[in-house]
Amino acid sequence: MPLPPPERCAGGVIATAVPRRAWVLLGFVAIAAVLFVVDRQVLSLLKTTLRDDLGLTDQQYGWLVTAFMVPYTVMYLFTGAWIDRWGTRVMSLVFISVMSLATMLMGFADSFGEILLARAILGVAEAGIIPCSILFVVSWFPRHLRATAISIKSPLGAIGQVATPPLVAWVTLSYGWHMAFIIPGVIGLVVAVVWYSLDHGAPDYGEPPPAANEPPANAWRLLGNRTLWPLLAVRVLSDPFWFFLLYWHAGFLQEHLGLTLAQIGQWAWIPPLFNTLGNVTVGVTSDRLLARGWPGRRARTLPLLATALLAPLAWLLPFAPSTATAITLLAGLYVMCGTWLTITNVFVADLVPRSSVATAVGVLSAVGGATSALFNLGAGWLVGHLGYTPLLLAGALLHPLAAVVIWRAYYRQREVRP
Image (cartoon, rainbow, N blue to C red):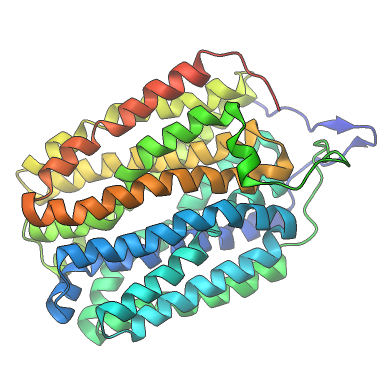
């Protein structure tokens, strides 16, 4: 079905097509988003290696996750407003550069304390990556292509996500675990410079500009916006399980199923690949529903309700009889979690004015990060004493609960545009 025509304003048709530079820049934004995941994924992939080399305990690993999550969560309350004020061009350079340097610092660390410090710095910097990415898409793409553009970041960056487990395993086994942190840090510095050089002159699609007397975006003011409260509750419920999978799935495969680091490299790329394919499918589907005339809230929430049906896969994971079965179950859970992160970040742009998009994404990530930090801090103790099974059984309940909230709050309600 053909897409709707471009919007008009007092000056006529503003933009007739997405410029080629927007798609090129989207590729580098995708690489930045991949590095955002890779910089955390390396730690999870090397959990057992660091345990053997540095004597890292499960409790200390839980503290490393928390050392990242606490500043990551708190800074979201500020980074979004900074991005709304100074723009993605300047702030992406700052955040990606600091993120990359912190990752390199972990590569030079030789003790738990040094890694803890690097993780805290990484948390501060990474709190700006998602708001920058979302505001970039809102600025460079019209409304009916935003979910597609955000989901396309996944296949554009799929090579990096899928290649990370085998590359980390190869680099670690060949050159030591330090280089597994240093290499992505160097790549990140290059991406920061390229994004800065391309991100200027965004097109005008005819969306109304902010009112002249509109106050600057503010996280505390957005927290008072009741339209956002159900979406905030959804992220409070759903984010912890995603962060648990992200940080602990490699340890689960090694410690629960007995895989070696080399075997992790052979298998662990499959869930991110399915996450990529799932994100593209749901992003395009959501935009197609919007183009067909569906109300925006229903078009955004339907993929969330559908993928929440995958949550019971987590109940089967502790009892998987083989590696192939465990990877298949993890792939389904990755699709679910990735869909919820992608679509909720797109959805928030439909609920607030454009001048507050980055701030709203920051608030959304902050409230989800708060519960994720607590969940993962407790996970360190629980894994050490009870194993992975109780956490997987409990985590499987979170997305269905979030689905009930979003169905009642948005899917059944009539749309009211901000």
